[in-house]
Amino acid sequence: MTRNWAGNHTYTGTLVRPGSLDEAADVVAGAEHVRAVGSRHSFNDIVDSEATLVSLERLAYRHPSLHPDDEDLERSGGLRDDDGGGQPGGTEPELDALTGRVRVSAATRYADLARFLEDHGRTLPNFASLPHIGIAGAVATATHGSGTDNAALASSVVRLELISADGTERTIDRDVDGDTLNGATVSLGALGLVHTLTLETVPAFDVAQTVYGPVPFAALADAFDDVSALGYSVSCFTTLSSNAFDTVWVKQVHDPDSPHAAPESVLGVPALTAETHPIPGIDPANCTPQLGAPGPAADRLPHFRADQLPSAGEEIQCEYLVPRHSARLALHALANLAEPLAGLVQVCEVRSVAADLAWMSPMYGQPCVGIHFTLVRDPARVGAVLPLIEEAFGVLGGRPHWGKVSAADPDRVRGRYPRREDFLDLVRTHDPDRTFTNPFVRRWVG
Ligand SMILES: Cc1cc2nc3c(=O)[nH]c(=O)nc-3n(C[C@H](O)[C@H](O)[C@H](O)COP(=O)(O)OP(=O)(O)OC[C@H]3O[C@@H](n4cnc5c(N)ncnc54)[C@H](O)[C@@H]3O)c2cc1C
Image 1 (cartoon, rainbow, N blue to C red):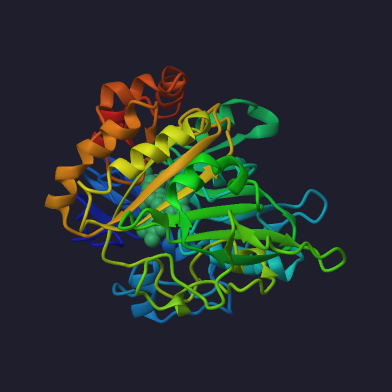
Image 2: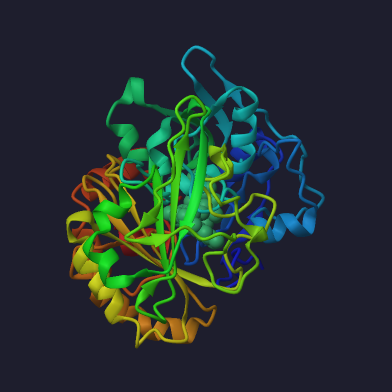
């Protein structure tokens, strides 16, 4: 049985790990139902298949500088090579020097791609909190980082190459297919098996991160937009156990020719002088360097180091993306959850995400504030409080993160996606027999 990274969910379906694209096409063509499995960082049943799970991990690119052994690989996000699979090196990305676009194998982790791009003076505009996740899975679930002007990671995609249900190859390209690509990026795995993505890259840049805290909760709630504007990427962490945000992480672009000093304080609170972990009590050695030390964007924008365990490991995550104009209300609603969630919260992260155009993205058409919960790995106790979280943020128009748990009403969620019917048309066009549709997709999309 294959479990997700956090160990809170056991997938249905039989895992197959093809060693070539031809083999993958044969597996797909021969299966009644197929779901792609990425690096298994989702917390719900999004991956489950009624028949076959396909991992393209053996084709993923692995940068030579990042060679976790099998045990590390399993905990840090990859699948264990216990069936003799694995292909150190994998398929090397192709960088077009003229356009800056990179073509990369779907299961490649952001960490490996970032190292490859750095070797060529390029990077990506943003990263999630951890660089361990696979690119195709992150794109399919609208995974995002932080920053008022930073949209979800799927926004960098310009081309998808997929294997369809009959094993044939399809391509969806922004330059050729226009808006259709916006329907295809955040696909929840329902369009086909994405084997290669082409992403836009940007010139490599450095970032310095400085952490402040504790910052009074009410003051930050009132000044959320101003605090969010303090850096390229800003994340506010609270355990809800005091009337404070324990830490505020400000990540600023660092240009050695015109150094931009970190803010002296955040709402009057000075910077910490020792490194810290978002979850109090965990060794900050797992985190990317702080204290204003500049370094490559991929080593500062994620909170967690690529070669270490991210977050807590034993956890369940929940997140709502709430329209940014309701940020203040959302933060007050968050404060009101302190009592019912006592003993369950490891940490909450509040961050801004820019609007995007992906039809099934929770940030579609609206800048959002992400209200995220890292909860204890106790499905029964967490399940009991999820309705309270839904009550708090659903009423504000919040859309749950596709890869995390929620007690949202599927009818209500479907109603919050104005392009859902267009997406379903796209699914029917690409996959008329709904080979790639599982109960999760039926429930939340149709
Ligand atoms: C510690 C931790 C920190 C996290 N931090 C963040 C964060 O900062 N921001 C955020 O937004 N989320 C975050 N997440 C959630 C995570 O980014 C998403 O759940 C994401 O989907 C993970 O990608 P994955 O490869 O593990 O996908 P999986 O969970 O394996 O799969 C998710 C979906 O992607 C589809 N998929 C995967 N590969 C393919 C493919 N080749 N073709 C077609 N479909 C495919 C699957 O079918 C499924 O529908 C975090 C999760 C963890 C565990």
